[in-house]
Length: 321
Image 1 (cartoon, rainbow, N blue to C red):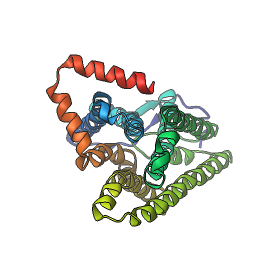
Image 2: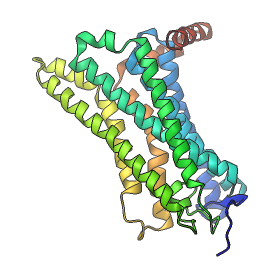
Image 3: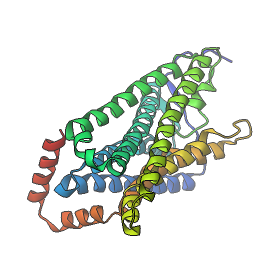
């Protein structure tokens, strides 16, 4: 096989070589993308607009929505464009950018979910200390730390991925996915990136262990609440977060913890869609379906004029910016 080292472009996997199915794929992904973007934007608008939602829990939710907006925008638009134009290519810099932002946003996503678990732990297990522990400055520092940690995570893994020598530029995936790119290596340098991935897996596992321990203490504290109504009210603030974490864990397990040798291209695509597209699509619905405060804020936003919307948004940015 020829040594490509740094190819000028990569070739992505087609969903189909039938033109009608390519157009169908474009419209399906367009609907999914618009739904995901609209859902996450509505979450951001609802929190920014309603001053009753200017609390740590919803501040972190806005950060999660921003990360989900980024995640769905990294892969889906390029795949849609390729289907519409009957193309498969992606430039080398664009491929690097996809890998970088996927690792960056995935890492930030896990970090902010860990922070949100800590927020729920303090709110339920240490309610008297909540105001002092989760004040505005502390919340901004935790959110900034999540974004910075995600950036370092992205740079580390992206650098390892593209430090290898390539023997092919044909990626068996509809976007630039690091494990599929590593398969193109024709040198032992891929072991470096494998080491990065194992190290990253331990970091992510550490975050999930922290979340599990936090919820064990939360459930213990909830069981001590004397009234059933009080227990339900406490759990209602945790269930959306716990559902989002479960969705992320299950989709990640489906994608990466399975025998790769027996996986077909169609299976790889399906599991990658479950991992990269489904969580950003469903997270807004998970947080809004049973959340009366979010629903109320959205209804108020629809009813009020544009001037009041702008003023409330500016107030939110001044408080948390």
